[in-house]
Structures are given as structure tokens and as C-alpha cells.
Length: 593
Image 1 (tube, rainbow, N blue to C red):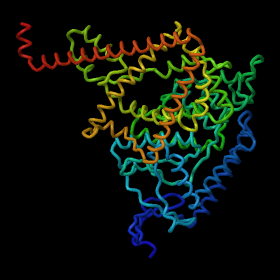
Image 2: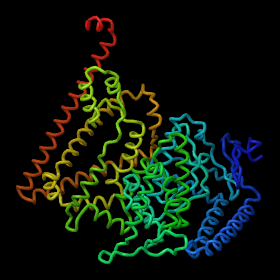
Image 3: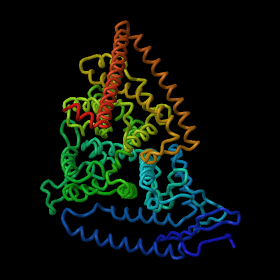
Image 4: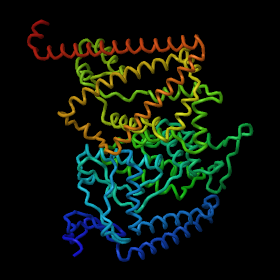
């Protein structure tokens, strides 16, 4: 016998194959995926039926004015689907796909794929090592949430960074192993993404969160969802033909962008989950806008849409409030800061710098304000006690306001969602300067006219940014102290939120991050020396401005730190008074009488 043991019945069944559990004579537990004997015939029949149905639909739509598909569009879709489905039948290629997928995401440190046992594998039989773990339906809620977050991060990183995407990440193809890693299964259906599409997807994710409907519309145009130039039915009637909205006679800009973005924004605000669910965006495009605006789904995007919709369905099961865009945001930001196309590089440069390398001040202020918007604060224990006390109402309100307004409380523990997003952002962006992809950002920072930036920061318009710098530095210092306390208490900590935030890191990933952090620190040192030299070359006035700016920021940090410590002291003192009065209710009543 080929195997020492093999299950009589399959443990998993799909349309084109079945999976059995087996054990080799060497004692290795394996999963044996066997293709159905009639798999090719079934697939060929499905493709022919699908093509005939679309031909009928195409003919029917041609009889309706203004509703016909673009010539060849449906044929392209059928050909793409047929090609992808045919490749699913080649298990040798599927094995290679799994290896390639794992290598492409090795920098994350928590993505695994089953190891292929090549000795027993053929083009119709795939044998992999048995994964010791569980699917989502067998996981506790906290572990299910952790797996879902890692799945979203991995798939987003694939779509916007590596360009090699698992196109079928449903629950049966995802597992959480014993070490807390996410394991992807079944690599028959994969998708390649070009650099320009990756950049467009990254821009779209950020635009959805920022509710920037103009940028989202531009992303649609870049990905081919809408025509170039934009076409619509001015009267909104089915009998009308689609026509181009037109171009601005002076700037040459597509006037359809502004018109479509207005209707898109209005529709997104009326649909539930418009800025948190990918499915809501699909609803808006299909049900609200497609009749009036000419839209199409490019064949190459079909699998990417499927990936996001599948992930969102999984996320909705473990957390109804899960915002897929927020967890995808860090990797979208990394892609936006590390463009690879000429247009992407030019866009980033024009966004941050003027032609003479001065900072784009207004845009810079907008970006900082957007990035530093405080997240919703969870109610702390102190706040809860204050709210339950009706006496000294005014004092409590002031204390509560002070506590909430401070973004640097050392005792305040971030929520599970905020911690997960912060960890993802740290992985995605912090090491960018020291990575090969960070060359564009390094060049921009090197070219920046820092003398002009210092002058602007000292101006009246720079007051808000100076304040943000002080708050950020104070928070950073406080966060370092909080992390030290968490590390010290980690051995005794069994918090559910920690389980949900768990992010395993492989040895390979840890070594990569360490190297990138070393290079990041070197780059920072080089940039600091370069810009100090620029200040010196600017003369005594430039040096005085730099010294004055530094002094103001340092004194601001000291001031904020002192105020935060004072607030915490007042809160703790108030809490002790409440505990004391509640522990002696009889004495307090007698005293009041």
C-alpha cells in the first residue's frame, strides 16, 4: 500500500476534488487531495454553458437601447474565468503556487502554507503535510478575530504590495495552527496584479476611509471600472445612449469625475456600512449608479473583488462591526508611500513637494490633521465611577473631560481594534525607510527644503502642527513606558484582547525587520545630518529658528507630561475617595446627619 493509513471517507469535498487524511509509512500525517476522474469534463461543460448563457444575455441587451455591453467584454470575462478554472486542475502548478504565495508574504511572519510532499504528488493528486489547527467554526471568538485580522492583512498586502493574491480565501481555506499562525489552503485559484492596479487599489482603500469620493472615483477610473473619459446618461433614461460628460476647456480635466463623485458620495452616505464594508460599495455601484453611469468589471478584477467580499463575509461572522478598510489601511499607506510606476512617483512627489522642493504646506497640514484624528475613546474605569456618582457633578465632568482629552494616559489600555490597527501600521510603515521599496520616500525626504519647513512651523499657521508634534512626542514617550509595564506583566497576562491581537512572528520575518530597522536608523541619521548641514548653510538666522523651534517643542512635551501626571494623580485620588466612602456607608450617612 502507498500509505500506512487512509481515511475511508473524504474529510472535505469540493466540485473538482476530494481530500482524505492519510499517514505515510514514515509516520507522517498528510492530506491527500484527489481530483475527480470527470473533473475536466465537468469543467468543460460548465464553461460551455456559461458562454452560451452570456451570449444570450449579450444578444438580449443589444436589443435594448443604451444597455448593450462593450464589444468583446463578455468574451474576455468568460476566457478569464475558463483559464483560471482550468489551471485549478493542474495540481503541480497548485503546489508551486503555494510555495510562491508563502514566499511572497514571508515578511509578515504569520502566514503559512502546507508543505508539499512531492514524493506522492502528481498533476492530479496533491499530498501535503497535515496542518494541526482549526477552521473558523471551531475557534473561540477571540482566536477567530485574530485569524480574521491576519487574513485581511495578508490579502491586502498581496493586493497592494506583492501582486500575488489568493483568490478564494473562504473559511474552508483558512486555518489557525497551534502556534497562532494563519494557514492558507488550496492555491488553484490565484491572481496576479500589476503595479498600477496595486497603486489604484491602495488609493481607493484610503479614499473610502477618508470619505474622499473624488479620489475614489479616480481610483475607479485607474482600475477600469469606469470609462476614460467618463460616460453617462444625462437624462438618466434607459433609452438614452451613454455619452462622454466632457473635458474642462481650460485644464483638460474630465468633468465626469466631479459629477460622478458627487453622486457616489451621496449614495455611500445613504447605504449602511458605506465606509466600512466592501459589500456596501458593490451595492452602490450596482444598484445606485450603474444605470446612469457607464461601468464595467474588468476581467482581471473579478478575482480581487471575490477575495475582498469573501474576507468581509468571514469578518462579519466574528465581529459585526469589523471595518475591513481600517485593517487594510496600513498596507495601503505603505503602497502609497512606495509607488513603483512613473505616474505614482510623480503623484507622490507633487503631493508632498513643490517644484522647488518646498513642502506643499496646505496638503501637509491636511494630511497631518487627518492622520492625528483621535480614535473614539473607550470608557475607563475611572470614568465609569465618575458617571455613577451624582454628587460633585461639575467636578466629575471636568475630571472626565481632562481624562478623555488626554491622548497619552499611561494607565489607559487601548481597545482590541485600536491595538490591532496600531500593530499592523507598525509592521507596514515603520521599516519602510530601511526597505528597498522606500527609495522614493527616501529621495523625497532628502530633497526637502528643511529651512523653509522650519520657518513655516514657526509661523502662525504652524501652531496646530507644533501642538500635534508635542502631543505625538508625549504619547510616544508614554507608550514606551506602558509597553515596558506590559512586557513585565506579559507572563501573567491572559487577556482576551491580547489573544485577539496576537501576531506571531517567524524567525525569518524577525531577522528581516531587524535588518530593516537598522537601515531605517541609518537613513534617519543620514537625513538628520544632511538637513542640519542645510540649516548651517542657511546662515545664523536659520540656526536660530531651528533652535527656537526645538526649544518650544521640548518645553511643550515637558508641560504636557506634567499635566498628564497631574490628571492621573487627581483621578486616582478621586477614585480612592470614592472607594473610601463606599466602604464606610454608615459612617458617611451619620456624618451627613
